Length: 422
Image (cartoon, rainbow, N blue to C red):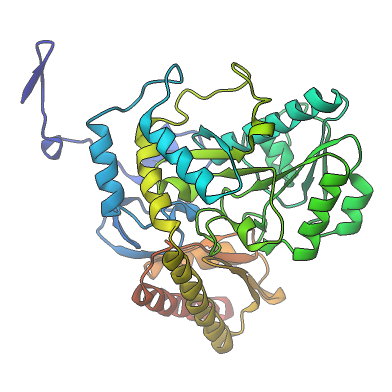
């Protein structure tokens, strides 16, 4: 027991008596914009989760590609604990040492020269889109404000970013949307040539559409995007919120393509589970977000930056990235083997440890059913729309966990097919 301003405080958190909570409490006290699963995870380690009943699950979701080094990674725990005893928050009135160290690491590993830190992928994309419009206004005039995006893309949930995203169902119903945003089909060069013009300030693109179904950008298309952006003095924004920090086998996915973006956004795996995001760009572009034009209360806080620094040190290693490529091949081959047995997938696609298995026509709309069935077998997977199972495990998942997870998936599909035919 310690005293603080004459108030007794129990310093042993393990002895704290916490009110028991169950899944149904969510429906009473939480805004219903999510539909959480029936279980509540209470602890995790590596690629394993345990629920309130102490049932164990293999996690092939990684918090939707977030826990890049698995749950409760010792080095991340150590970085967080150490920083928590030094400095938590100082506001953007000051800079801080972990933020400066992290920015230096990111610029040394990428095309970028300067970094803006935020807390989520949506915030990073918001900053990127605002910067693109400010850059265009300052250099070419306010009429140059068109943003080109792609159908089925996803860029976040702020009103600007959700409108930039190519899924109108997420942005409809909230009143007038931000204008001058055009959507065309992904990987369609002809549509891009027809749409982009002198009025375009930016093209925003995901190297692989994650939420949109695990669709990878083609090399010919991204070269055309880069060339057309150059022709019309538009900025190329790479949304690497899901594909970045080793997820596709490169530190950032653009490094496996023959182009370089002007702005890159990063989040999810960057903090290994601790909220942080970053917008990366060059000095010539960054200078248009001058003092006071944009900000974030928590962005670049010492806790997040200390943790992210360890993630970057770990994932930015060539040997580590080679292991991601190896594990990708192992997981993909296992999915192919399952499909040879059950013939439920029309295609298995993706790169690195962001893979999608699209269901055949006979099983369209059933990805959610399989995800639910997998939970019963102690397996956590994702969906990418109604027809695609998505796999985004920790980048350091063990071979044995992949093997066991695929055994569970095979049992899941086998029983699901039996239920369908009953």
